[in-house]
Structure formats: C-alpha cells, structure tokens
Length: 274
Image (cartoon, helix red, strand yellow):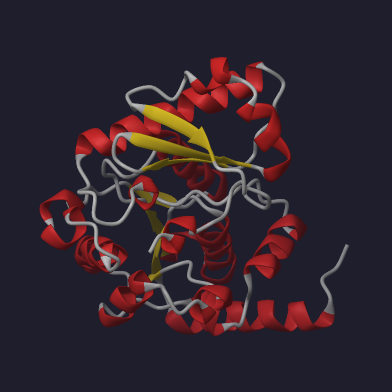
C-alpha cells in the first residue's frame, strides 16, 4: 500500500522540515498526533537526536503514561516523564476559558529547560493543521509564545492524514481515540482540584470496564464534571443502551446525579456550555 501523491508530498515536507530542525524534544501525550510526530522524527533524524517527554500531573490518566513509555520504547527513543505543576497556576485552577493557555505554558516552562539540558535544539508539539483552523485553541497560542515548533501543521497534515500515515506505518496509535487531559472534562468556572481530577479518572475507568464487561464495546467515553452532577458521553450508537442500564451508570461514583448525554460523544463539547 502506498500513500496518495498529495499526502506523500506532505509527508516529504514533514520529513524535510524535521531534518532541518536538527534535533527535537517531542511533547508526547501518547495520542495519534504526537505519536506520528515522534515516529517521523525518529525516521528523519535518527533515534539518538530525538527524545519524547510526557508531562506527569494529576490531569494525565495513568494508562496514558504507560502507553507513552511503551510507544517510545517501540521506536527505540529515549523517554522522559517530567512533573508539571499546573495546580500551582491560578489561571489553571480557576478554570476559565483560557485554562489551556496556562496548562500549555506550564508544560513548555518544563520542557524548554529539559531540551536545553539534553542539548536538543527544539521543542515540538503534535499540533496539526486542523488544530490551527480551530479558533478556540488557547493552548496553541501559549506554545507559540514559548517558541515551540509544529512540524505536522507546518507540513499541512490534517488529523485524518495523520491517521492515514500512521496506518501506513503500522503504528499502534493509528486509530487511537482522542484522549484530552482530565481537566478538559470540568465545566468552566468550577475550580480544578486533585480530587476532581481523580474522581473523573475513577469514573471513566470504572464505567469503561463495566460497559466492556456488558458487551458494550465503547470507544469514546467522557465523564463531564459539572460539580455534583456528571454528564456521560459515549459513542452515539451506544447512548440508548447505556441510558437503559442504571446498573452500569452506578460505576460513575462520587457524584450526586448522573445522566447520559443524548447527543453522544463530541470532542470539545464543554466549549458548547455558555
């Protein structure tokens, strides 16, 4: 199987751009975008001039950290797991609509010095061309201010194209569902705390487990934290079945009330809340 000429041209552009960078520290969340970037960097520059860094904080599900380590090992790329301190930034804790700016600013304040220590010339993020088209991405602004490079976006690669190349390269992340940080589940205006993030992670892990045990093969699942109320989003074809199973919804503990969103999973749905 070969890529379409237009997509191959973009991939060529990505590889040339990476070669021109010389060496990179990839901000590696473990998702499809940063995974492709890491794989492309390892191919273009060689593993010795590439390092992956996955920020460890209460907003990162533990399963994501384990997957990130495994993927870096799969590529024979060094992996670092520096701790970040988002919960010490007022702008992040207050959870306004610019929360992602403060989160990304914290990330880059840690990765920048790490790259310098490792003698890597650039910090690269997995921002793609679709991300740049989204007007509401304060995290991208923070990364730009911090001087991070965006090789995927610079090559014009969309999310669908990232997945297509990942499948061509047989990357295990090719069809991995989006996995935004846990704080993205909290309604704006509700303060971000360690307790809030931990109960979201417990709720999502528990609900996914009982749904799979019940034969409901869920791919996308979010527990949106609205304070004492939880709103569950799952793949649209599973909404009716889950709504009818109050026994499964009992896995979403530590909330006063729980409901299933009838519209199903939507990335960025918290931005719909006025």
